[in-house]
Length: 529
Image (cartoon, rainbow, N blue to C red; front, side):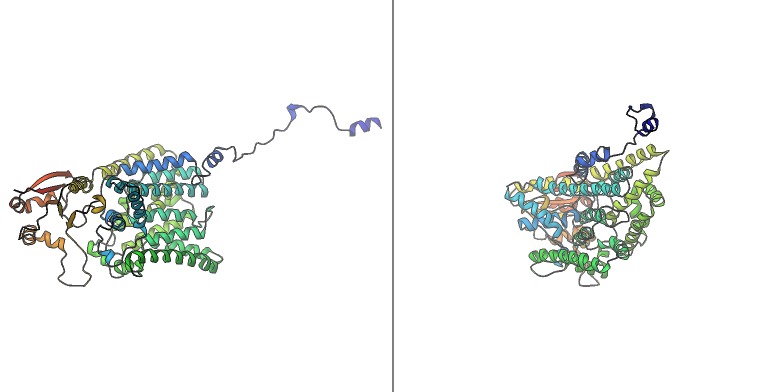
């Protein structure tokens, strides 16, 4: 009995350490690298502080290294309007008199201008650069959110290559700091995508993504083109369809549109729905074709391949290897390019908002490349660096460089300037900031449907010397200064000699002069005898 009892009692000896079973170590996000990064950046856009600061710094440097002009709208439809809103002088193009443009986007810069005015810091240098820096910061936020979206849907490795593709894109570098509605549309579209209910998304929010889509619509009325397939896909997958419409779509849409109408009423002085006017003129009436038309296949054969650059083969590969749940984004890209292809007037910037979606597929491509990853990275960096630096620092920089010479006219009494260039070739009062007389060749479209209509710019270039002689036959209204492209000089040389105009400045513009665009821009001053 004692023996049996002793067997039943538990052993009090220390167990043999050699025979112990090792405990499995659990991975804790709290002590993992990702957990440390999340904790470090919890209060700054949900990412690591250093990552956020690097991205913002990158886009600010990007901004300072883009010193060229792209299209007139980056000045004439944003900064020039904001200057008029704030300082009560500045030229408003025909789109504003016809109510095709809304004041929502220019209001952002008008508020900035007003703050500079109140603090006595409304220097022309700040008026030019601060809006661009602000736009660059907005673009950096979009870069961060694109990375965060993919990291939460996939992992940090895939997100890293999507982020790399985004920062490496030469066209994104070229456009991300420009005060274009297309740039802000791309930013708002990326923020909307972050909250869009993609399959597997952990950041989805119907109200938030619809809010950013609505804002993009207010900034640029064609923005919903990209979102039509995404909205339809969301609606088809949503179980509570009536709630989606009544509790999300209608409140957000009415709030955004109502705010836009009120802002535009304050400045137009009457109730105007600019989004409808924009679509009516540019889509239904095809007024945009007045500024040039392209064949239907232009986006597929030129536009999209150019803005993608050397990312294109990686994009195609990414479309093959990306998970099925991202196919809806590919559908949105193809849909957008096809719809814009039906419009006569085409520009590279119109499809810029699809680039962030394309970079997701490029990121999947780079993730799946194993053997040739380093050569692929080097190829992408070098092939994008060269066009980015050339287009940002060299090509078409004269339009901005000549403005420093024009600014000096503010210090001279009774100065006046006539710009003998294709209309809107250079910025206006937003880059001068003094109310000197500045005239240019206007080119509004024919809104009256006249068969014999010819705009002022075309009339001038048909016979430049005859136009000048007829315009200034009495010699009394001669401007003190002229600005022109170098190709025009020989055509009006007799006028320049007769009226004692002397070239006082010459700035480089482009290595690729074409038609009315010359390699240099000249400033002439009239010498009074």
